[in-house]
Length: 582
Image (cartoon, rainbow, N blue to C red; front, top):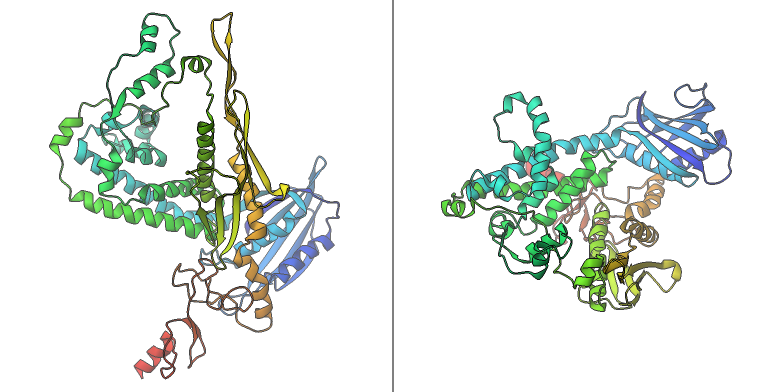
């Protein structure tokens, strides 16, 4: 039998005996979920693989009807200890189950088993998952193709617009240094391509994204008292401060996105490519994925691929602008970084701190919330049954005003996250607070603090010295965990809610509560509900769209189609074809 999924649970939450009765309880829960048809748990000989305390095997059959043949399974449980910590290794094995990205049987089994065990154990460590590996392996070539299309498009457009030397004229030093570090090893491995210009092949996806939005600058020299002090030795030289001054005296020559790439790519490309990069890193760094993530990642790849294909087609028909090449051929481009803030007052610069005003502190909190909203939207990108409704927090932050809302699509149930308290203290070293909450209950509060900068004059050294730098204590991951816990309580996945109704209905001989073989007309997912308890008949549990579900008057098959007058028979496509062929 082949091992398909293996993981370890570590550290018991409560005091219980790990024996055959406990494992039978686990298997009973799987059976109640409809994942196990029948099972038999036996204690086997001592294992020499990892643990030697005891080993149990639970053998069972999974039967999901005529569409899928019965499969034989074994879950191997091995118990052991490391020091005083108890551990249980779980190995899901089958001799006739074939991995398939369209078959979620193994995914349903491993996730349910993981969820059952997590209530009794502190930590879960995933060791092996051939199901997740299969999904990632199907995404690898799609990612590879899309990345290389990006490189092709950038090269073609930049060469036609600015000439063969565009790399040296535009690309920041950080990216060029990365290319140099990888250059020699690349040439050693690919000897047949030593004479090929491979620059874009040796940089990362994130670097490709930066090239789209470069803004070359030129310097317009102006008198500056601080530079004069540096020249005359009246102040210690600061490279960072000098760079700030030079940036304030610079201006953009062009904007590659606005002037060049936007002619070929859609306005949504920047956001779509950002999501593609996040998903690409998730897959290429060998992180676990399930079928929901697989569909979302594949969809994001296809969106970017389609945009690039259309852009490449447009670029192939474009004409090289000789005037543009001559104009920009001698440019020396600085790093593509955002302009740093204008010089602060000299005493704040000396101290190296920011002492923000009331208005600037409010702007600081706005940026924190906006950045978190973007981060949290990425966290939720695999929960397609949810939508995020952002408010205009950029305008102002007011108590009792919504920061953003989460909506479950099928029933439009809202979960509002609002500003409960907002207190600003602009004094040096003072603390300002922002409280986010779901309700008046303090247990639902999340507090974000910002400490203003503080400084003092040092009589001995004759300059201003920092007492404390300004900082905030927002941890995006912790705030996301705080929100996700509430989401799981208030807006659970409808696919989880439908499980019990589906099990009872199928057990009693009825049809499943999700329409089989037909997808929602809006989102193309097989999540159209035909039950009686959770949602309207024909409503999609993922996107909320209402679908017209009909019953064929000839064969009784349920299908999605338009309503017809009473005098016209309601027939499925197969029966229509049957009558047409007669």
